[in-house]
Length: 191
Image (cartoon, rainbow, N blue to C red; front, side, top):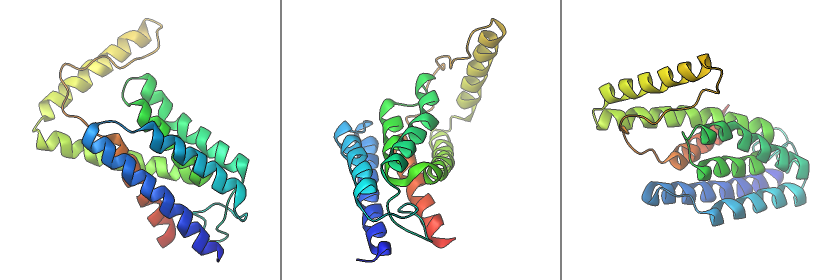
């Protein structure tokens, strides 16, 4: 097998895991640990055991990045979304899913996937608000959250998201993570 074929096979495994997680999040608003943890193990093993390269998403030298490459990618993926979990703006499953992505893609590519995920999540949030015609409620919630954060900051406390008056809608962020990551991989393949 050529390095490109191996990389495509590994990225296909990642795509299947992401689609399964996104489907579960969309249907049940939950990302199963079985998907995430098996993906983490696969990402670390494949990066540790397969022919060495610059990462599976690399155009120039596709191949595994190694054990440390996978672990640092996992850590960066986790670190990028963990603050949102602490602010109660995201679920733990979403954070673990992005860590899984990092175990496959490594540090630099997980950062690209996070950026594209934020873009996909923002677009999805706008669709949810538009469908529910909740622009006024969105503005009110943002005002309450920002004002609460400013009050906490001025009192010397860490800013925290206050509970919004009423939710503008449920957003399965696993769908945004899958969309963003797959879009990032497609972007890398085309550019």
